[in-house]
Length: 488
Image (cartoon, rainbow, N blue to C red; front, top):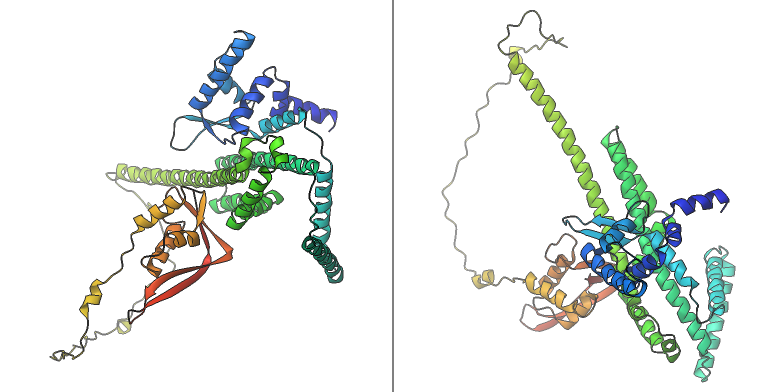
């Protein structure tokens, strides 16, 4: 943080340029209202222009026509220009309408501006407890002495036993009003910071894509070395601290049991009178859903970057093949031009590496093929009575009906497990229908374009259905498999 570094940040960093801009109140308030508060990741140009026109009209009514004289479209293009960098303007694949997204630097500036407002109170107890808990986790996670680890676990068990004994005796210590408000305000702050981190992770992946494109455009070596270099950089990001932390967060969030527990705790916290007095933001109730949507958007961005990289490499292969075809056509045209020209002297000489000698006795003799004798035998007719009707009793599983069941279950929630789906809509065709569900959940299936599926290997589900044995008696069968979750 020396003078030269700060001077460079003042001139080049978008967040500092935003804070120093004379239009900072308009930019920060508008972008926070349309992007940060509703957790909007991308917005169409027409919608964003309309929203800014409404704000400009209200401000001109208060401050006069000379306050903000330019059109909303001009302001948006100015904010997305390289010298500003407050918005990212791009085009989605297959569309010709511009899209806008907030840059990480702008969100950092808006977050800092929010901290300047007066808070209800400055809580220190919850932060101290959080710091102490983090130090305890570091100390316990790095302790390699088994004896000390056992001693610490026994101390925690004794403390839990004492708490259980007090609860059984009717002594239940509760948090006071100040502690509840302090912890909830800290939860809101950390939740907002977590949403802001997703844009920075997504920005890092886009920077990786840009550097890869530059490397491909300027590469002169072999394709294998190029791919090895690109995949090495991709693995380095995935194996970095940020990549491992994001993967662990995504695995934690994708667990349905943890999501249900988080929703239950959040509903109980929002129902407390002390929290109602704080008037929390309306989106706090679905904060974990915002995390999931932001994580899904980041995952889709990574998938799009992979597709663009593959298409970029395919274009390079097409150019190489086209160059080879041009060389071959040049050789053919020159050969046709010399077709009527009389050749003089030696045109081409090829040195033989050895003489080909074929002795007559080394040639194999002719061997006639043996003729097959066919005996005229008639098949004997057996006495077994076979029920041919079973050949027509084939089970046909209607995958369209199963897809409709999945979409119907996802109308009321953002995700549903296969176990819960089967409990609500029992299997009609037994194991064949279960296999059809698994086929729909497979990534290669195209029957569900708007539905994704994931598998939680840490949880085993038991799926049961009614069937009939060989004697026609009803029996119950079951299958144990990892938890399959369908997501919108």
